[in-house]
Image (cartoon, rainbow, N blue to C red; front, side, top):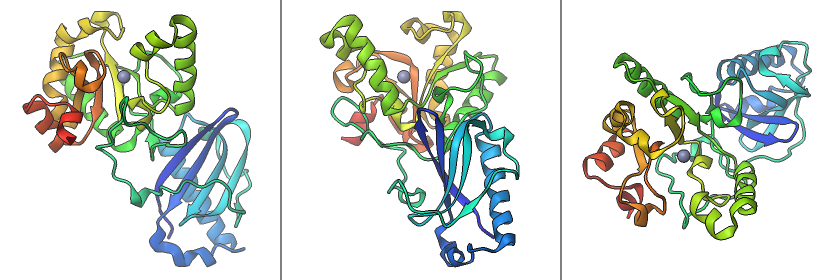
Length: 294
Ligand SMILES: [Zn+2]
């Protein structure tokens, strides 16, 4: 039986394209996916249940199934189709021609320690794998790209928020994944408003935002009126977050007094997933990611 080991989202104007990666150890099944009706229905079921579980609120235009670096099947959808409306009425085409496929397939990447800052930028086509929406309270309703996070970080965030709640700490998520293209729009509007020099200080250039990794989340609380302000750092919630984030694999990425190292002023609200072991090392030694990796 086929299984899906990861996915990639490509944000296009009219909706998302989803790439689903099949387990490459099943490479021999490639030939089986010819005209066999049985296999086709099995594949459709695996595809439907994977995307419905992980990406229920996404609007999509096409789902492509990738084996190795080949697209072996696709389900083209009407623009604006939501995943939750998928059923068996959409055509699943087998052996479609190869189109744009990312080279970094899931088995190649383990990027918890990805360093992104003003000296280390990401390419415009860098999209993290396995973006999903964590089940935590957000400050806004409905689906938006910024609700997404890489799956491992999303799961860790759910655990962090659950622990906070159990301790009567009310946390809300504000903004996670941000594509290169959206950062480009944000940066341009900052330049128009404030000029290039100031825009550089308050906003990241495209490719230089850690939010593009899918491993970061901005967090706030009702006490600071759901804003992202330094004051959050001295609230009960901000203190709790600083003390407990590492236990769940997160660091306060831009700590106080480290502007010269990180290139950013103090941001008590911006947490970054690096994995539990490393987060605990970084927190206990008062380091930044830059210093840890140096
Ligand atoms: Zn942030």
